Amino acid sequence: MLRDHPLFKKMIETGEDRVSKLASSLLSNEKVMGAIQKTVSAALEAKGLAERSVRNALSTMNIPTAGDVKKLESKIDELEKVFETLTEKIGALQRDKAPAGDAHDRAEPQA
Image (tube, rainbow, N blue to C red; front, side, top):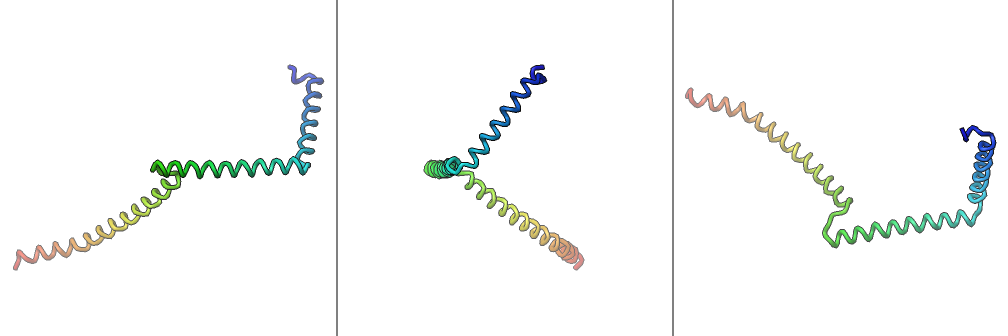
């Protein structure tokens, strides 16, 4: 409809071309790039400060942070592995002991 109109197409092309040129000139300008870098740097610093403040607040309220939870999950995983290993070893010891116990029990009544 309207997009198919040649005048509208020409306006879009002209607008895209001008925006592209403006973006190129802004990105090549040292002052603009410096301002962008300072803004990004300040934003990252603010984010870090906010994260530290939240961690301190959570710690003060005795609420675990995401990092604390991850550490605990890691410790739980380690303990589960140790528990599984111990369970396997106990099972193996019980299997090894069971036949010897059965043979000993059978020998006593015959004597």
